[in-house]
Amino acid sequence: VARVVDGLSILLLLLACAAFLYGLRSLTEREDLRALYNLAIGALMLKSAVDLLRSRGS
Amino acid sequence: VNLNEPSASVPRSGLVLAVVTNPILLTGLYAWGVCVAPALGVALLQLREAPLLSRPGLSLLAGLLSLVALAVGVFLERLRSYFAPFLGIWGFLGLLMVCLLASPSAIDVGKVDPLRGALGSGGFALFALAWGVPDVLRRLVPEDDPRADTSAPLEARGHLSSVALLVAAVGVVSTMGLFVYAWRVVDGPRALFGRALAGLAGVALISVSAEIATGRRDYSPPSPGHRLRRASTTLFLVVVLAGVGVAHTLLQR
Image (cartoon, rainbow over all chains, first blue to last red; front, top):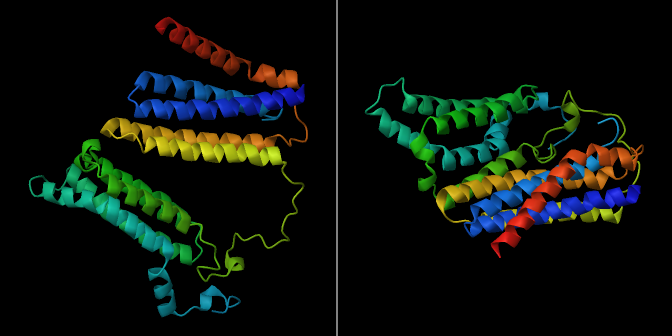
């Protein structure tokens, strides 16, 4: 199960990368709302990825 | 140059030459000249019609003081002073910021020259790198630094797996992609917003990918249930936001 959670953490990082890239691409196409949506969801995915990883003490 | 020779015995003329040819000073002056000198020119022109105690006066004063902070910071850095980074980095950059903020017309988004912006970005990147130039290249003896740790180098406790390297590489490559997209945004305020976002997102991506890459080797990992509970709030928000996005897309069709 620990490996699955590790995998989920990496998957969230990859999805965050994709969301950020898509968000910036939307900004080039002047789709501001879509850009902000993707940047927000990317930031949340990054936070989730870190939260899944943090050790007990941190 | 004899690296075993203590820096205190360097002759005064040698010290002056070393300061003048210092990479920190040269790159700092370059960045200052590209980004701040034009703002000072604007402030000088405005001072003809404004009192000395005004925004242009503050801009001019901060711009000139930033040069002093840089020069003193570089000199202190040669003397291995603890205060060198405070003046040479924080003092210099803080005064630059005051100078630019006090001269709004000089940093008007609509008037930003892309070429000067790119040259200035490069200048500040070089300035940052110059502070990290190895001591040997700057002809300093590393062990002369009072903060130097002269004990034996620490042994690595292990090697990172190929998955870790892959995760870190994904973070770096994605960050480069963000900047490629950011530089493709052309219209003024949106371009500035895009570059700022690319910078923030890039720092976050590299930090998190490095943390995931190295953190997977944690020696006492918490239980998977604990990790999932810890991330439950943000995961819930991700699911809700993703659901809203999917619903919005479906309704638009």
